[in-house]
Length: 204
Image (cartoon, rainbow, N blue to C red):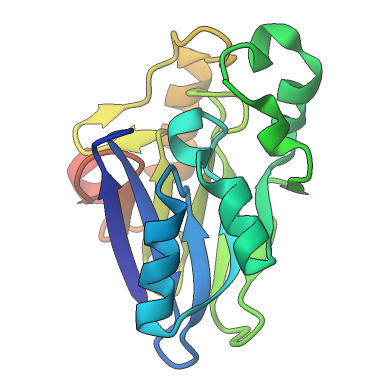
């Protein structure tokens, strides 16, 4: 498997990831925050086929390029089912410049599996980790011991819970980190939404 990080710092200092099956060159893109044209060029240059866009949470610095990519690639984007609250609660959606980005999102829930059509052996388990936002989620590949953690946990840090309009909850965040991330194998590599990769063992 290829886990390639693309970091954008001119608009948002956030990480976008390509998760690609080397056998089929099919895969997923996770948290495309900006620069859709650049991401499309990377896909073209590598001959990759992106099957789905996966969102770790609905903050703008992780979803800025979602609509354009979904349109250009003719694919769907997926996020935790609780993100629907952003569409109906003005106190939550007011934090984002365009809440309509979630209008056609495909809802996933805790425990679901995101399976690569071109190679069903490649799959990501959905682990709901609300706390940073109400719709925070981790995508875990148990076979390859990799987890995309969004803003739930970083190298030597955790996501903020005080951002207005996000439904943050510190107690819930800590509980989810301890019960759902720290229970993964210690050598599981964590790919966060900001900064460098780390491991479960290092963060514990």
